[in-house]
Structures are given as C-alpha cells and as structure tokens.
Image 1 (tube, rainbow, N blue to C red):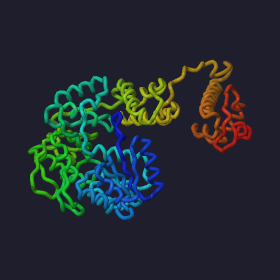
Image 2: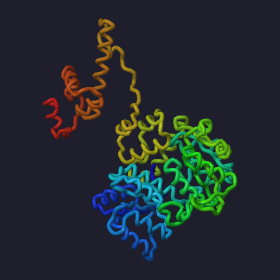
Image 3: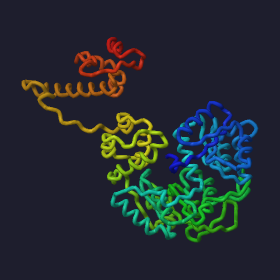
Image 4: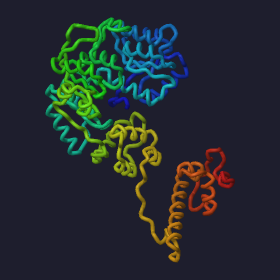
Length: 482
C-alpha cells in the first residue's frame, strides 16, 4: 500500500524520537517518499509548536512512547484532551501489550516495533492517512478500464451513486474494490467525507470504538469522548473494508444501523443517527460464511442489495497497458524517475504474467521499476520468464547424423546446457559464482563444465574490466578459477 498524493501536494510528518540515528534514518526515508519532515526529541517541543499562534499541525505523527519529559503516550493524552485528532503511529523498541492497548485507546492508528521496516512504515502511514477523514472530488477518482465486465460495473456505479442503498463489493485482494467504492462516492455528488475502516486491522473492542465512537470513561484510558467513523462520515460514505472479518457480536450492532439508522457510542446510551451510505467490501464469499455461522444471514441480505464483483486482473489483461500508463504518470515525479514509457519487453512480460496480487501487485512493481529501471531485475523480481526464443535448428542441436538415438539425446542436452550456461554468464558479466547461484548448481561443477568446454569468457563476449564480488579483477578471477 502506498500514500496517494495529488499533484503538487506534500504532506508533513513530524518524527518525535530521542534517538538521533533513528530520527536521521526516518527523515531521509520519508523525504525520499515526498514528505516534508520535521524532527523533535521530546513531546513537549511538539506541544509548544502546536500551541503556537500559526496553529500548524502535521499530517501524521511518528512517536516513540518513551521520551524525556513528555513521552509519546503522554503526548497522545494531551492531544486527546485538547481535541486535536492528528493521525499518529507509535514506534517503540519494545513490544508491550499494555502500551499497545493504551496507544490504540488514545487514538494511535498503529504501533510498530523498532527497527521499523521501511515498507511496513510506509504501509502504516498510508493506512493512517486513509482512516483519517478525507474528502474526494469526482475528478480525483479515475475508473481505468476497457474491459466489458468493468465497464458494466462502472455503469451500475453511475446509476446507484445518487441513491442511499448499500453496496457490496466482492473480489480478490488487490483488484481495486476500494477504487470502485471511491468512484461511487465521487459520483454521488456528496460534499461529506469518504471514510474507510479496515475491519481486519483492529481488535474487536477497538474496531467498535472506531466505528461508533466512545464516551468518556467507557474503558480504561478513555479520558475524553471520541466520535466514531459513522459520525465523521455525516451524509457521506463509509467503506467497511474486509467486512467478512467482523465478529458476529459487532455485526449485530452494524445491522441495527442498517435497519434503523441508529446506534450509540461505546459506553453511551444517547441514540445517534447515521445518514451515511454503507459500502462493504470483502475478498471472502459471505454466503459461505453465512452457512458456517460466521456471518449473520440478516446482515448479509441487508448488505447484498447491490452486489458488484470486480474481476481479477488476469481476467482483464486488456487493462494492463492503461494501468501501467496511469501508474507511471502517478509516481514518476515522486521518485524523480526518467522513465516515461515502460520498455516493450517488460510490457510483453506483464501481459503474460498471471498477477496473483492483481492491480496492487502491478502498481508496486511499476513503482519498483521507476526507482530501479533495470529490465532484467524487474523480470527477475517478478519471476517472469523472458520472451521465448526462436526454435533451435535441430541439425545444429544434435550434431552428426551417424549418432545413436541415445547419443543424439545426450548431445542435444549438452548443447542446450552449454547455451543456457553461456547466456547466464553473459548476463552476469562472467561472475561465475553468481551464475552458479542462478543456475542452482555448485560452483565446482560449473568450473568443471567450463573447463571441459574450454570456455573462458573470451568467446565473443566483451567483458568489462570490473572487479568481482571478492575485489579481484575479472581477468585475475578467471585465471585462478575464482
């Protein structure tokens, strides 16, 4: 998952950590991802900045819970008391269950343990920003497809967008269910927010509080009342992503909202009304969960008014070129990439690949290619085979005609093996250890084969005068069998 920034938009991250090395590492990484980064070594500095006359605040906070003077959890408490709802992620050197629970109760979007994996952090930031209330204008949501099934889905979306009926979106992970949901909201014309809640990302108690809010004192650490996502959505749209993960007891409360439009905050008795349209999305077959008792049948029928099933990317390969173009345009400026068009070889490989991760996987690989524009690396990362070569000449392959069938088979096999090894060695500039690793044979066996075939790297290959992985020159490495 990645953070989606509109052209010209920069979001700010405040890193609050007393570890100089960690602050520097996070600042460098986040800056490379297009964020404006400010660093602090204590929470009291952040409080002073937030209290300043200009009233500025970051898009997201990254907090260490243990800091001098004012720690990360203390900072979250102060923010909650002052009614400042800033998306926050706690970064701790310790996995303490009590601290995790307290951080989430205080409104933290996520809790990661140091040393933090950069991809995990970027995904956590994306989730936190998506969970924060945002509005989307119609022109910000593009429906990229020429597939007949997808165009039919688009037509249904256009017809139901201005109604208030629930919509159930089915499909494998990564097919674009959220894009469909955002498109429906954009076409609805509503000026109220689109709010997303990932039902699989939070424990049950926290999910209930996230959806419906809580009153002060509803549980330990609830020092202030907190509005839920239904309140924040207003007359907009609330997307219940991975709704199949919601436990049955919470499904009953959701059913009540769908039937009567009413609910109460956690720990409260005052009825509140919801006028938000509910869109539910899942990669599970809900009717199967109904049969096993894991999903309420009455809730399933309430959600299943309009059902859209988004096909997997492998079922709509004609969409791949347009999606590639969109992702290149979307990310090339962020990564300062010189790539404007994907190479023909890569596009051909993409069209042959089965894409188990669907559109999300395609997006991630294009991002990788924009950062590391090496076709061979891109194909190797995807484990996509190169385009098939022309069929070999049988006479050249098997050699003299007076050989027996057994000898012909052995000769053909050896010629194919030699061709494969030569090709691999050429790709790795005759780094034989790397070639042995790629061919999955032992290094000594490779040397024996090269000696038998009298191959030394000079057979029509202009080898660069670089150093191998041991620091020796290539010429020396070949001469000494290294």
